[in-house]
View 1 (tube, rainbow, N blue to C red):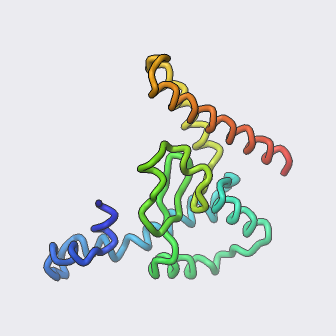
View 2 (view 1 turned 120 degrees about the vertical axis):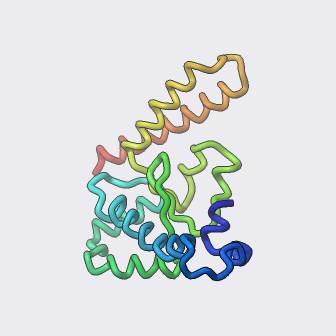
Length: 169
């Protein structure tokens, strides 16, 4: 719901009643700039190799030297136009410009195959550690345990694939 109002829903605009000094106006005006700077810092300028579908595209552009310092203004412009968005996630980042349909339906593993995902190995390892710890507190006979164990297995499989890709490059 907060995304709905933050993106400037016509109903939300009625709530602030065209008050040009209302905080929401400042928030909406600076949000694309804030997102673009986070995107640039966490992806384009990241020293850590990126995975996931969108992350792999960024890595390819980095290798081909398509990304340059001049692109910063263009990237910020794309964020202002709503062509791209960025939100940091447990696994790295998400670039969807629409409300996520995956997270509400599934666990964190839904991000792994999303075309808007950016996966960082360090964050994946942190999630695996937290998931392993959480699993110890669940009843092994419960459905929740089996579901979370399945998610942990999926996360570990992705980590193994990332490690294989990292050793090749």
